[in-house]
Length: 313
Image (cartoon, rainbow, N blue to C red; front, top):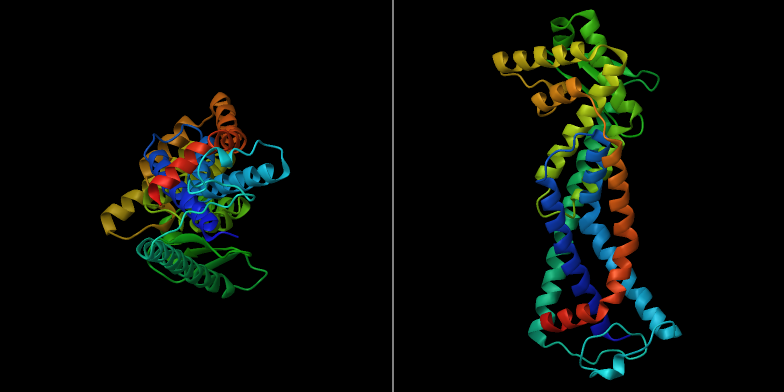
């Protein structure tokens, strides 16, 4: 197989990865959706974009090449010079790269691969450390109380998550408030949030600027857990617990783990509740359009893609 054929796919995937990052960055700076379902669906879409877009475009071009080979599509390769880049398994492009160009693209591959491996190794290490804490708890126990004066309540563990609460937060809250906090952490376990957060973090490995998306995802995770608790208790009570913990954090300068991020937005979502079914339906249309129409768009405009690659190479 022509080496140029490989370079064409690599350059296409690289451009699609950059475009995916631009789209994800744009989504991360949009207004937060009024519906948690819409918000999380949109964030998943943005998180997977730098990975799904190169894969989807590359697969579309492979199908295009196979369609030319089997005669499903007209082979127009000979209408222009073989030195013009084209995706075809019959007439491999005869474009050659100079030594400098080849070295430059190899360096790009090595830098990107090293960055992805480094980020993946960091995520795996963090995952291992989080799972180690859950292993300290007896297998048949879901809740673990530990001695600490700070107000701590969190869920740890991947496959068998456990709830951890400090003696400090137990002393600070009333019995009913303790139940609200416990219900919040139980909601994370029931929703498999730890496992979903890991997958979200893996997708963020392919992002150039993942910070904003990560914060919005964490906020949506906490809001959904708050709303689950509000279905068991009064939503005003849940909001009061958040305010109480927020005041303690401001006065004592201690981090309160259950607060997560953006307390004001969490309370607003609690009081306003949701949801907009029309917007949820619209988000479904957007996703289906992406996976169904994009391949058709790529195949119908592949000559423009080939010309663009020719400019780069």
